[in-house]
Length: 242
Ligand SMILES: [Zn+2]
Image (tube, rainbow, N blue to C red; front, side, top):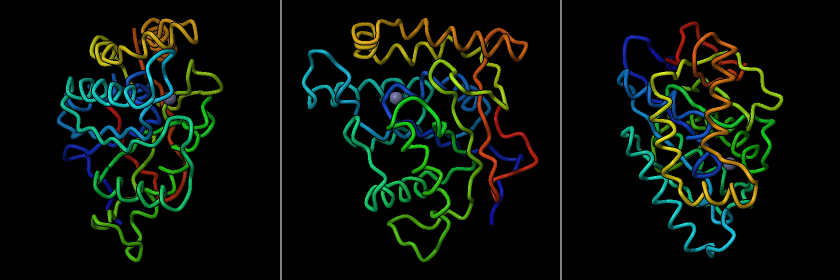
């Protein structure tokens, strides 16, 4: 088994259920990863095609992919778009194999993904798919187009929405990258509108408030919180997050 080494830049894989999740929960950290020389891959599982009061699903999926690509480009991250239908992601055989291939192609040293107890069923299913697929990605007898990825990467669970039932075990100071995080989030124009119309929230203010609260907990102005998935063989002695 290959362990990641602190002496070289990391490959970071961040997997979100919907096109704006990674921005809400981890973009400040990913901006810091890029600043220290890491390669960042952002994978979006669903196409977000249900997130509108007035745009039809097919058109919305196209809009959301272009928003996600614009956001990823801000930090020079690679975007992997899986395109599953919003609200209808399942952990079946085909989807598991697609996730195994996605992990192998990304070759991560570190993985960020949703917490198993987050609010949305797509988030919970992504969490499980990533945990399972990053383990099986190291199994040689399971074949997919990309080579086996021998590193069973440590997983850091993203904060839950609004931090409900989530106590971070690690914090990343994002005071210097908050503006970048909010700029990335603001690329998701369709969602600034949708979350206002449907949920009655200003998602930029919402996101900044959580970052401020996590900062309060950790003694900085703004922070993002994470929980390490405690499972063998994913435990390492070095700090992997910035
Ligand atoms: Zn989501």
